[in-house]
Picture 1 (cartoon, rainbow, N blue to C red):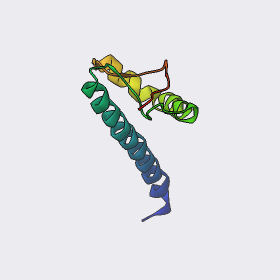
Picture 2: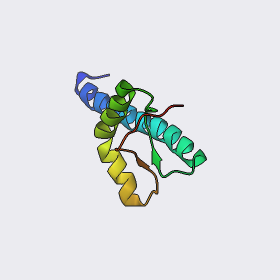
Picture 3: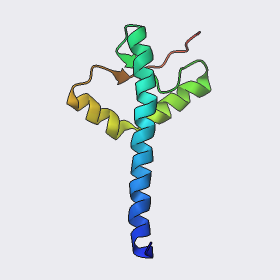
Picture 4: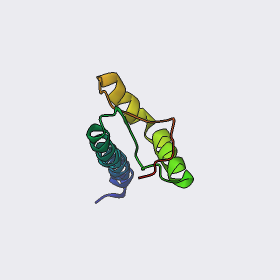
Length: 87
């Protein structure tokens, strides 16, 4: 593989990892939200202050993909008013 192709291939791999991780985390959260008859989901279940922060960081990282889904008409959105869950 020529060295000129390496940066392009690296970018494609990073984009695939970014989108793939979003899809995996959001679909797990959406599945849990649907079971609880909710339109809000969590990337990380908010059972402690640290996990709430992890969820909010995921919201910031994935915001371009979240907004893309919102504009496409999805009814599910990540919860940004996190409250501690006792489950």
